[in-house]
Image (cartoon, rainbow, N blue to C red; front, top):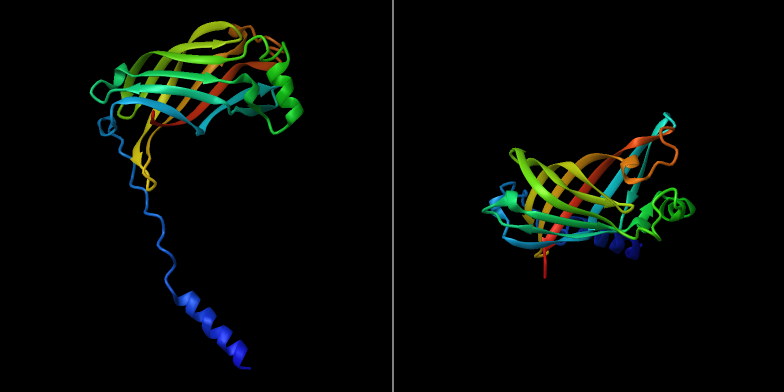
Length: 207
């Protein structure tokens, strides 16, 4: 009987003991752009996503992701509207959750035709502030060899220093393109011409 009693005492002591010190809480991000240091910031590929949504035969809004994003952001807190953004997307990084369908969308000439057009790029040309922390980002989108101006609605989510010593600047953006303008006309209008874009992006100081 002594051993079970000893185990019970040990279990009680473990439950009563304070847990290991938790990781320090992250301070609320600073939403004033002046809080972030000037310089070139690199896109954090692990914390960036591009989601696309299109109307499918009028019955649903089909959604998938492109996960292969890279890019940079040149920033001066004294002149935030002069910032420059450059993003590259790998069209072979389609993620529908179905490997065969991923390959069909990325490789088929009726879709992304990635062998012929191996990159999708966006290069900013203008930034406008519409309200505190919000603005419009206009740039040239090149998709399937066609370049067109696109404007995104952008929210600045703030600048933060993590408990691990890194610095982060984060943004959310939404926009819309007509795929037919980029030569992507397969099944229009049965599958919608309008493609809704949603971007989440974090940047770290470039090393």
